[in-house]
Image (cartoon, rainbow over all chains, first blue to last red):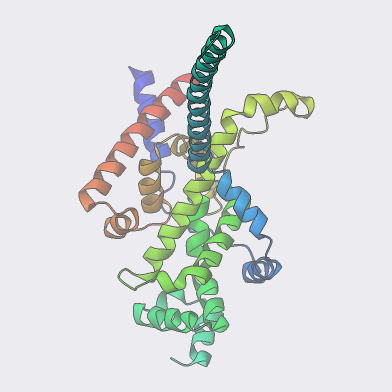
Length: 104
Length: 210
């Protein structure tokens, strides 16, 4: 019981530890460094492009579109293959018929 | 207000004397590409942005970096500021957004910390932040405040923002609601829940560290 009261007292003191705090001041010469950063233009078009592409939403969208195109191409090629097999089969049948018919 | 007068305000660091009307005037000058207006805005509002970022990020270097990014954003997109809210509210919004972006990015990196830990030198765990001591905290509260900041860093994003803005930056509920684009009652609820969660976390901490 005493321990619990002690813990509660510690919590109350900690919760009030930010009371009366003053605000932090920005480092000196911030404006000078800011201007240097703006003038140096470290964020080139490539850096910006890469950081844009590295965003999870963009990266996942690109991956999804890539997989979608892949899936479409595979399905198309499979259909084409089936059609080709059918065409080959028909062609073989015709040629077989042609070679075996004495007088077509 | 003449340039000389605004320069006087800047040199005397009397940022509180810069009224909303003065701010609108400065913003209009900045929209026209006036660099002295930009300098004045930076000099009078840098502490506001830095203190906000520091409270959220709990790292002075990161806070300075974000402060610079905030003012770069202000310079680049001042034309988007329509004056519907106070300029300081707009600054807070950008500072909070930028800080949260960095926190999220750090969390993503932390998820892979075990990999970098294996690859890093001496297997040191480089992603655990050190204890944070806010420079504005009174000396006798230093250790307790560090414990509290550690608990604050575990809060959900919204509660963390609302609590930090109110407690560290002293922003009133009305302005927090404008910054976070929620109702005042939602802000009250967020801060209430934040306090409850902090108490729970501190209870666990003090039970372990008796």
